[in-house]
Amino acid sequence: MSSSFPYFDIVLWAMIAGFLILRLRALLGRSSHDEPGRAEPRAQPGDLQERSPATAGDVERLPSKAERALNENHRLRQALVGIRRIDPGFDLDAFLEGARGFYSLVLEAFWAGDREQLRPFLSEDVLSDFDAAIRAREEAGETIEGRIVDIERIEITDIRLTGSQAEIDVRYEAELVAITRDREGRIIAGNPSDTVPAIDIWTLERDLASGDPNWSLVATRTIEAGEESRPGG
Image 1 (tube, rainbow, N blue to C red):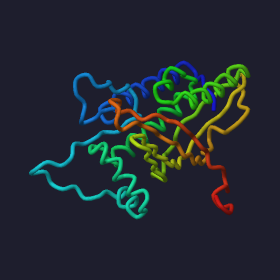
Image 2: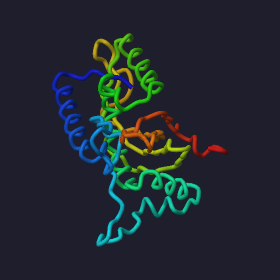
Image 3: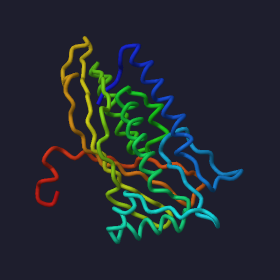
Image 4: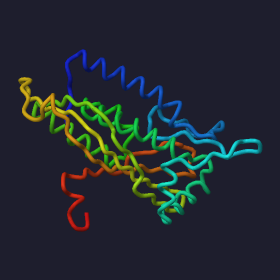
């Protein structure tokens, strides 16, 4: 993954990123329990809208498709119950919507080599890994031009709750276009006319008892072609 586009593309991506941040600021890093003195949400899509528990007179909301799928797994259902016991405003659909925007924003910032854009979203370990990859590109004089054609599927594959510390694994299935250019601008990898499938599992983490409603990316894993078909995959 690399960065550096022609000037027009840089401006265009900056406008898109700015729009996403403003759009997701309203949806994501916000908590229904916010009050004076609590930590302010970062301008990032790492958190998801939290809705207040139903009050008298509210129409009871039926479980969404995502929640029904999660309820089929007893362990995940119990973990979700545990999360809502600590944070009653946690909304699964809002989380997934925010995770979708989060994926796009992080990938685009990574391709562009924008460390400052990445910094609020990532744990120190993940930021260090991303920074090393960006630095290797820069030293080789290589750049990446990438775009997400479509995020075809997004789902929660695991939830872990240790005390008030929640970790949620999100699986993304996407179609991407990414080309790598050398310092002379020649394409050395990828094809601008071809899409490539990508399957990633990202782990998002948050301390539910803290005043910060934002989630951070603490681990990433890419599923290689054929990996899931192998025994134990």
